[in-house]
Length: 271
Image (tube, rainbow, N blue to C red; front, side):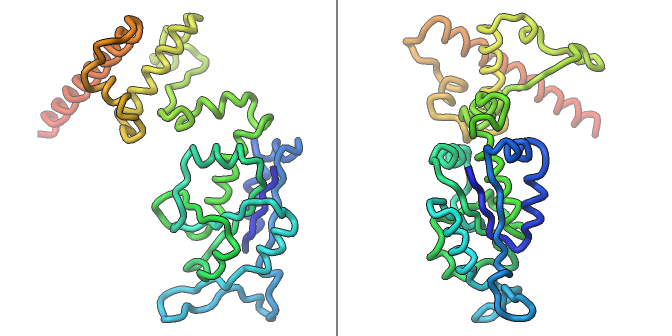
């Protein structure tokens, strides 16, 4: 898969792609990363790429980078052109997987200063944001998108299951992970993970994912999942499934009671 960045700071992209998993993926030919600098298409001595906004206001606006985008499209004619900007749709795991399985290459147009001249979007397929905040430039968001997509390219990770089982791929936060030593400063790896019983291990992992998601990101849970965790259990359920959720709900209640008790003690200690 090919990633081409239209950027004023190609060294930032090159640095990010020269380490760890992305570097190994590039060396194996699984991804290809390149850059086009809009300054190379300017015609003045200072290679000016920005100007003051019409109507007044603070900061500078990037002039249309159309020549650079056209050059990028010559190199990758079937690529999806994405402008990184706060006004785009917000990146989610489902979008990452959509991109990864699309079979397309990608051109990322990276903004700076106060943003793009609006007319540039006639040469762009879509706008994309990585969250409800503003950064100094579009390079870091574009690198994040490339990194997220690359994880689904066969051969980039040791096992594609690593990407498919991560947080958000399943719709839930990931369960806790442990490695050696078994005992670290008095904290032990849960016994179930050392049991070799993969049915129990999978059950434990699902419980942990559901508990973490309920506590930290309840918005990720479906209506059915919320009902199973906090509402009435359906009358008709498999015995094994009912037992699973009854045990899980008991664990959740115990942990909530423990947290509440700790908060009371802390309040008492603080007077």
